[in-house]
Every structure is written in structure tokens, then in C-alpha cells.
Length: 454
Image (tube, rainbow, N blue to C red; front, side, top):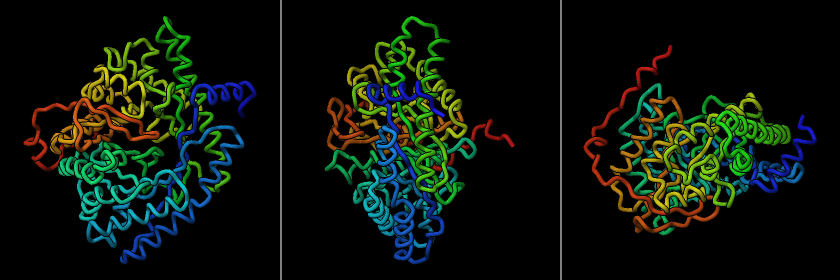
């Protein structure tokens, strides 16, 4: 039970420190929607999504009103579509048709995003996987709410470099297809190493094949709460700093558990996990970069940034598992550039580079996220950036990701406006040296020796 003192603290966190439940995400299995006829498959997919989630938005709003807790997004994740569409999709256009069906269902039930236009190709690509991947640029250009993701590697299987090279081209083509919207399509596309099956956050959410028919996963976020808690810690030791972050994360996770259990009960859908990720927004006081500065850095990107982020990420996880036995997803600190006011400022003033962000991804929850790069960046360079990040995830047995946006028609020194939670970002320079011979080799980078644990 949550006592009166905790209620008072929670109200303070909500009213003054930007605490919110970032998303209630319903995972829906579409495995039995597979059908050799594309039309029938699309009908089954639409009916399953609408029937399963028709009350999701209403229940989320009711919980928000009843408990006074902001619930920012209501979302859906589905079984990776490459698995569902394999029985009926023979062309890229067939997969685009499924994407349109997903988009129509998402609009009709009123959710913010739907994730799962995905393929899992860490070891190799089937013909269906490759068709879906090649359909992504068109699919994201003709839909609004659909998000796509591709898992390119894992600690157990290594890195599929054929898929990495292909995704370099897919990012570029997606950017070109949505050039009239500042290449916004790439904001809905992410690649992973070690992608989790239960991530409620977009653009990488999908409903894993080991999950039940339906499940409720909740993502909580509170960078502002952590920053406020650290304002009284100047000059204190690292031990005291860690305890403060851990206790704060515990309180935030308790809020997530309350919402998750209530949503599970009202929707009659099993509860899955709480993802305690410090996911920032462009709002003032809701920045992971500001937390790092509160620890004693002049700017995010200064010497010591990676150590500070490692401390933050670890204590957030420790506090979360104290509050719930079902902490999952990503859970830690996100460092998306365009969505974090402090990161934006650090990038604009030169304190933060892509190389520094890459170092930070070794210790945070995800990877290179929402980074705008010049529109003329070669697709082989994008593939090289992806390969580097996949290697960090593979060797360190952690989830890493890349969501870069080559903004067509813009270069270093310019900015791009995405709006809403996606924010805005400066176009960041990329390393100008060529890696095409390396990424064009083809094949697979083998798993590291520590992957053999059986």
C-alpha cells in the first residue's frame, strides 16, 4: 500500500517535477492472424487490434483522472510483422498494405503510436524479413502512427552485417521519402542489438513471441524528479548521491506499479512489466542532461559524463527492482538528443559529439537516439555508425540502438524541428572518413567468446 506521506510526495513530483507515466502499452499477439491471402490477413490483423484495445485509451484517461497521475501516451505493440506476413507477402507492396492496416487500426482505437512493423534478423534474413525491411521507407512515408524496428545483432548470435549494410540504405531512403517533413520517417525507425521483447517505448516496441496473447507494459519517466532530489546533494559523497538516486527511482517505480496494476485489472489483461526509463522531453526541467549537470558537470559531454551516466543508470535500476519484481523493458536513462533540452544545448555549444554519445551508450539504456545528421551523409557511413553501436551491445551483453535522422537538404549548423515530444535538434557532424570497404564485406561478425554460457 502507498501511505499518506508517499501520496503527498507523489503529488509534489507530479505538480512541480514533471513526473508522469510516459506510456501504457498493450502488447497484442498477431501470430494467429497469419493467412495465405493478404486481404484476409489484413482483416484479421485489424479485427484483432481493434477488439483487443478498444478500451485502452478510455481506461488510461480514467486512471489518470482517478489517481491524478498524468498518462502521456497510450500505445500498442504487436508481433513482429515479418513473422505474421511471411505467409502472404510476396512483394514490398504487400507489406506496405499491412502497414496501412496497422495505421488504420491505431487511428480507430485512438492510440498515439503502434510499434511492431519489425523484423528479427540478428543471425540471418529470410525472404520475408528482407521484403519487410525494404518496404520500410514506403510504409513509414504513407502512415502516421506506425513505428518500425529491426534487431540486427545479439550477444548470442553476433551481428548480421548484411542487414546492417541494408539498414544504412533504408535510413537514407526513409529520409528521402519523408524529405518534405524534415525526414520525419526516420524518427519512427530504430535498429537494435539485443532488443527486448517487452519494451513499451517507441519506436522500438514490439510484442515478443514468448509473450502471452495480450499484456500491459507501463513506462514511467521522471528525470525532473531525480534532478530535484539531487539539488540538495552538492558536495556530498558518491555514496550519498547513489542512495538519493536509488530512493527516488524506488518512488517513481511505485507510481508505475500502481498504474500498471490498475490498468491490468480494468482491462482484464495480464500485467507484464514496468519500464523505469528516465525518458526526457523538451520541457524545461525534464532533462537527463540536467541530472548529469546536477552531479557536478558543467555540460553533458564534459569529462566525467560517462561515469556520471553509469552511476545514474545503475542506481535507477537498483531503485526500480526494490519497488517491483517485474521491472523490464529497457529501464535506465535515455539520451535522445532532440528530445532533451539539456542534450540539445550541449550539442549546440560543442560539448557533445556523436563520438561522445557513443561512449555514453556503453553505460546507458539504449544508444544513439534521435540524432540529426547531414542529409548527404553516405549510407555506408550510416551503416558504419550502426555497426559500431551493435558491437557495443554485443560485447557488453546489453541493449543498444540507433535512431539517426539524415535530414535531406540540411547540413551542419542548421537545425530541424520535429515538434511535440520529438523536439528539435542541431544537425551534428559525422566522421568524414570512408568505411565502405568494411561495411560492404558481407556476412556476419561472430558472437564474442563470452556468449557461450551453456
